[in-house]
Length: 294
Image (cartoon, rainbow, N blue to C red; front, side, top):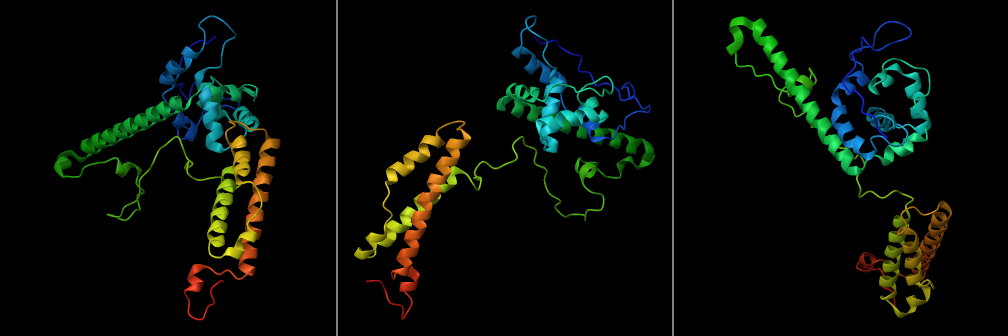
């Protein structure tokens, strides 16, 4: 069951702080609370739950805000909950009415929060945040331009045009020099970069060394004796049996890595044996005075 909450931005003066005083309006979490479109998020989040059946679900601001804090600071689930418990600004960002020293929720709830936001939802949220940020910059530029017009009096037609760049470019940046472009995207890691210990990387290395050995063995008849004696079809089958699984068990993944490392080691030993037997790379054979293999 989901109960809709009032997502209007709570004033920092209304936020209860036990040690008196008020929150800093320029704090990053206070500014982010104004940037994220909480109302639009709730409209996409609430339909996942029944209106009157089941226990009440956590509000969307708490769910999405906790995931954002975790990713922004690179924390674990347990550390994220502790940081929220200890930080009044984070609790304001999550829509709390005042500071509370109690745990906001059990760390295991982070698993459920991640399941409730699909990749399409995150892309849509990213577009909304970018749109809201542009609108805020344009409004700030318009208000600053209006203030300058009021203070300048007769100097309104001096030809100076205020732009968004003037609000976010460093003040001491040299005039006319390109200062870069800000790219905002939900994905941060290029998908074409393979993790160094990935099983896929070992399989590609095995296939590459096999092609090198085949090329070397074609250069002379006697080199075929150094070819590793293992079934390449089975080696690929062992890789595919694990690679096709969405979430293979750690024990099975380690066994597959060890098997591919064994194949790769045998191929490298074969290449070393070919070099010791007299093989030389093609560019060496073209050099004058260098003997070619028989």
